[in-house]
Image (cartoon, rainbow, N blue to C red):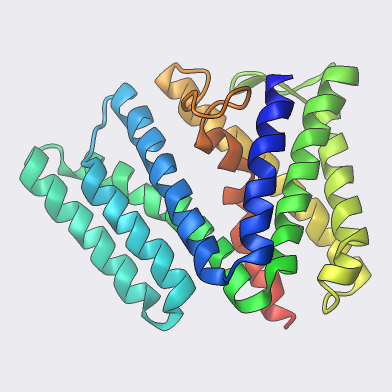
Length: 260
């Protein structure tokens, strides 16, 4: 029940920001989510024995995310500068003996968190609210179907070492849901993509969402924690809600851009 209530509170806020407000507000929302995600990610790093500067890394992530959405031509330069900034901060903070580990973990947040969230802001700015909401609907439908389908009929574990509750049956429900949403809703919200490609895209997004979930689960497993945080009642942390989007968003963005 707590899981459902949290969704009923947060989901309308996200949808209203994307649908009714200008694209800059989506970027602001995405950046706020990114800051929370970086903080949770940094705690995972601490628990696995690799700490890094939260302020420097969050600043670098914010700049990277904004550059992808607002200044794509300058994005490679910003990404390089952000990575260099993290390296220099860790060199001063930790010294040469630990700089490789801390820079690698902190730098991964740019690829793992900042770029996918920047992709989502860019989709809203360049392609419209419908295109971004279609991605959200596909991943959320897949995630919900995995959860309830797995609870109802799931027997065979998908990745028992990483995620002991995720099942093959639940994953199958998730893929079918992804195909259905992208195939049906995409007819109106992604008209430039033909049906066959939409169906393939729906399956791919669902599969990447599952991969993103397992990736984040492996990070938590290494840190010996169940949830990234407890900031969202019934769901865990921001990372626990984002995991399905982080691998799927860049692929979705590439398909949308290639078919414009």
